[in-house]
Length: 474
Image (cartoon, rainbow, N blue to C red; front, side, top):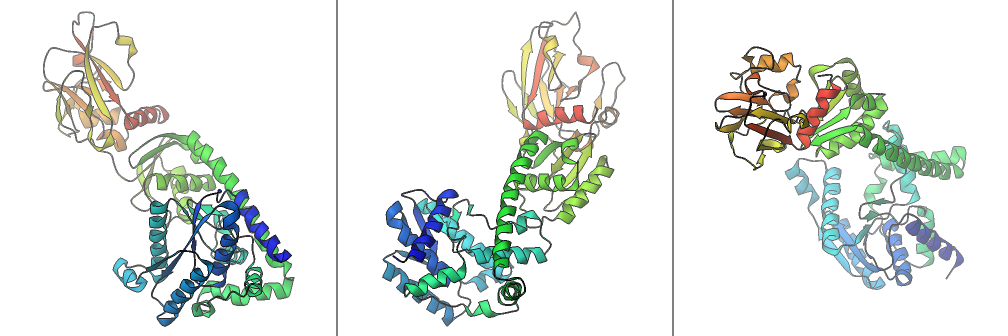
């Protein structure tokens, strides 16, 4: 084998194992469009297959966008795989039709279709999908994102691995790949759309990069690639750092609700943006509409406004701040459970707001064991209920006079975000405990009490509420 080819294969092999892309014996599906990059990918992986016992397959997706040209690409890939002795799976998808149905752009729909197909292959085979991204793609992507005003992530190199999607030939330049294909007598297809200068990427590849080489020398492009690789390492370090900071700042989470220490999140706009970047996917909200402008906007709002004013993010998410408590949520929690309670049985509250448990105890032995989420009250054999918030309820606070529940919660400075989420425990027709806040004067234990109840509210949401009352100074 030619020494240049041997060195190139060694570079690919080194890249694969340095970045833990594959292990010996793995199954790999090479995504082959028919272009030079994907054809080289298939050739390179097939040459490494025997030494590492790789089970190599190919996959071709015909998007049905270029008529006969797309069909010719499909036939070419069929012939190539037959020549290489590699099994091929072909997927035909009418992307234009799907685009109309989904009301998405053609490029976005094509990415969506490819993603769905790749996910299907990974699920059914347990293997990896390899794509033919090269060093040229890294440079083109960095320049493209630079002109769009991207930050570290956009300027960083294309990740070698994203789940089960791997990119084994990133260290190889396109001219190197084509030189080897020519030397091996292997043809490839040329996509006519790659010459269309209406697309920004094509203008970068066809016009800008040749001009950079002309003005600054061919090494300038290698320097851009190296800079992108260094930014990728920077990105990994930053993400690791902010992952630890996120875990330190996070006080609790419940379905669609996250709560943080404001002093850990609101140090600067960049930190706020990184926290949002991790928080939104945790809530099932994608990052497609994420921008530094939006995170800066949320940062400024949360620095200035403390109280009930919500700052919209997007996708239904909003931010609220109470004292040193910062909440990111996609809904206002409401406790909807209304039912009778019985001893020694847990009741699950609606909306993932936790569980309640009530037990008879002998006072006063356990009286000192309580906390915000545990109440000890006297009991006189009446029925016990948990009910949701209602404006017409009255409550008799400790040492005070009976007042409307809404007035009581305002006096105790319970944030509006939590007020209607609190479980209310009734003994007969009287409100005995506002969950997590206070017991009623009418149900306070004393030396003459013979029967008592221990009520416990537990779960992620209740813990979050208890933490919020401490941090917001309640």
